[in-house]
Image (cartoon, one colour):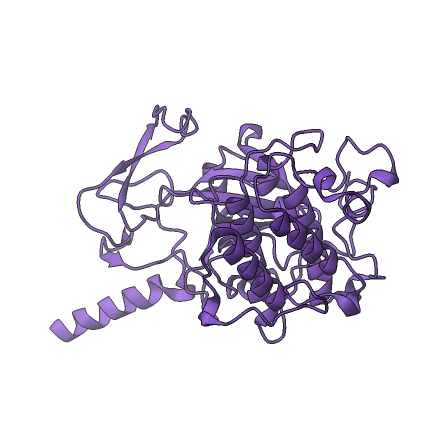
Length: 407
């Protein structure tokens, strides 16, 4: 009898965890819940009422209320058939390639609930794949949900797992995905303080002077380290769409690079309604996406660095003709005319940063690697702040990047 009962329990667990998803379960407490529920490590209990919480400027209003539960810190579920409590992570995708154990396979119902049925009020922008939403997941965390309806990706789950396997403190983390009929979704962590551009220039593309030299150097270095990590993988992982809008900063102003690896999905298919204007971040030596290399990312980084130094958008509304192109300004203008007037820094620091950016946008054979860019920026920051903090304690004085820059 006892043996038969044990066998029945094993069968229950085997059935419940088949495919490593339990998206059909509707139970999150003693009562049946109206929605599928997955708790975070701080454990929440699902409520059927609507939340009137006004925190975060009222952003949570209208969501199913998430009330903190008493003690347990693991996910708890009850099977409809037996009521047997299961502790685990049932919404995670399986099988797991190395480094992707955290990746969640979400349902369309979860995403609808997170975005209030993809309400316009939840839209925070438009990216390569289409509209981007801010959403409140059922574990109480805020996430970014990128909706792809224009460029259906073959073998979507495998592509997502490949991107999710790439992890670094200077990369925005991919935490989940969803496929539903003709729609595909990427779900990433929410980076609280937005993209760097909003701290550099206004709607006309002109400087707003919100960042000092220390923060600009920290952002430049963080973004460079993100790209360096991608390029260090075997084979190199190419971003292919690096730009200022894809460099985000968190509450500590740590720079994180987003949208790595997804440009190849849309490279051959123009986005409906996309602009026909020149992409100033795109390497002019490219004939097609198949020509893309690490040095193409370096070019894009160089344009980003010019924006960071000047405080101006590469092609803002203030530019009425091609003579006002940011690259041409950097090459032809005096240092004082080009650099953001609000930037309090040593002239030599400004000059070296401009020179480094111009090296990145030089012909491909003369561009530095991202490894050398990181070393150069660490050296620059050390000179500006009076102390040096290099990765691995490496000396930088000998790095010249093909010039006498570091004498």
